Image (tube, rainbow, N blue to C red; front, side, top):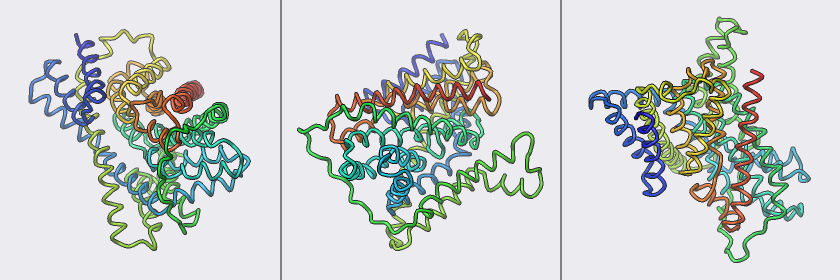
Length: 439
């Protein structure tokens, strides 16, 4: 009966968001309340559990999501994303420009939503295509897959942040391992673009989508990278000093990096570096950027909290005893997390919702799966992320951004972009499997 309840509420979330266009905040909250009643909890127990789950999930990542969004908005509005892309292009060179575009997308998608990143950088595709003679759709797929890789693996993107909070994983380790997984996944997207891009054609019947007016930026490359690099380095150092062997001891150096590497402080430092990019813009403009960032962050924060509430209700049921998972330990548990996330992503379209929902389902099972060490929990977050990129198709807003700004029809987008995300998801879980076996 409890297994049927679990299946029913997950089906409700998918149907409500896809068919009836219900916002995930409502579908997740309704699912949490309904699950509580169906599991026999009293009204008081349901509300207490939901409140505790919501609050605990957001206590560590609410401000992190907000600060990360502010960094992304400043990079976008000041034209720093273009500076980042051009810097990477200069280093790698025009001959390997599709790889440069892919890696530029990878870097930019760490703080900037992949939809926005694609809109901002798509104007580079045709310009570089004319210079090199390489088909524009090679650049389009390379950019799309590069942006998508960091989106599901690397904090402070909301999905990995939420999963880390729900699974109680070490954020620094998720970040480090996430970069190790996301980079080969991004490069796999580049190889896919080189393979499929030359056989794709733009849709001559479609009008070209109007491109965003490009911001001419005077930001220096180093300054553009600092809002990204500083938080990543600080969070990574916190994980280093907290390693069980305590390589830097437990003195003032340990205490300093332990504090500065806390995600809230690290992202706040990144925000101040982002503020430095706004020189030359009016105070009114910058105030508007912050307001826009907090508006974007608010929805993600609420979805994340609702996912935590749903997960807290699910923890009251002994899922492990309901499903025979004795043989699904370790690697088997990671594969199950990947499959559940992939099914949810394919069914309802949102990677973030797939990550949060899967995390809520998997959290009570971590001990049963034998995924109890800090490394195991971090890999569980990444396995869920790999599933959440498999696959992006017509129910995903990012699919339509890629197709519209690449001037391609649905059939071509399914061949180029959707199959590319399937290939990336498979590469992702393979890399995670290797890391599990090594670590």
